[in-house]
Amino acid sequence: MTLNTEDKRIIVELRLLKAEEAIVEAQDNLKMKHYRVSVNRLYYACYYAASALLINNNITTHTHSGVINQLGLHFVSKKIISMEQENFSKNYLNSDKQVIMMIGLLLKKMM
Image (cartoon, rainbow, N blue to C red; front, side, top):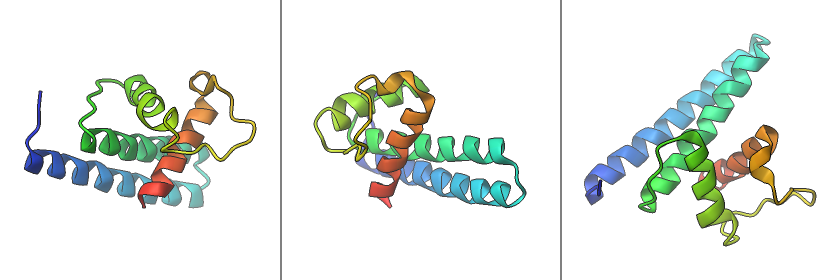
């Protein structure tokens, strides 16, 4: 499915809004010492921001792993997104922690 410019703009804005809301939810849950919920909300904040980036660049995905794979293919491997971690493994897709770090760096760049 090809999105027209206006539809794409709206979807990207909604995804970024969801990312911002998820960050607030993470912060609120952290204050209540609900650490697992906070980490979950941060993961989703990163996911929403990453999917916004992909949509904005006409890259289609259907799953969370698709978002991660396409980020690696189109942004990490081309050094558009830097890992900024000396010990970041080439097999970063095998570690949830490293995936969250990667998407977190993306989110920082988008803000």
